[in-house]
Length: 154
Image (cartoon, rainbow, N blue to C red; front, side, top):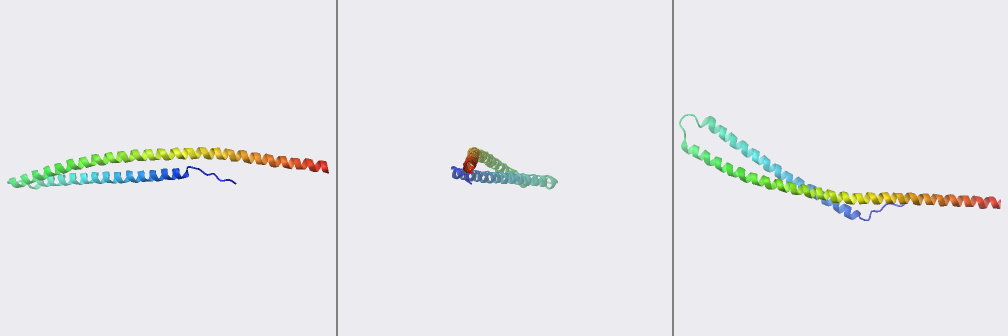
């Protein structure tokens, strides 16, 4: 029996590979985005912990002005770090969005080729069924002709 051969199988393989690459790019971008968010959370927890410590331990009794100035410098440094991290997170988010758009496009292109393959397979199956039917009709005609010839000869 004949086998279906899709002429664009190489293109379909390439589109599948492109989609897998796009999936990896999305995963890497998401990983970076998540790591930055975790870093921001840790930074926030650190600032909260230091601020709570200052409130609990350094605001009682005589105030140490140099400690308070140092704490204020620490907080400003942390604010700059948070702003920088927020920019990095925004960049990472745009990279995630761009990678996701690339994945959607790669999937669309793969599905296009798969639909083409499915249509060609359906046409091939229909053609095969017609050929088998024609072959069966031909075999039936030959048997009937043989029976007629045999009947006349006999």
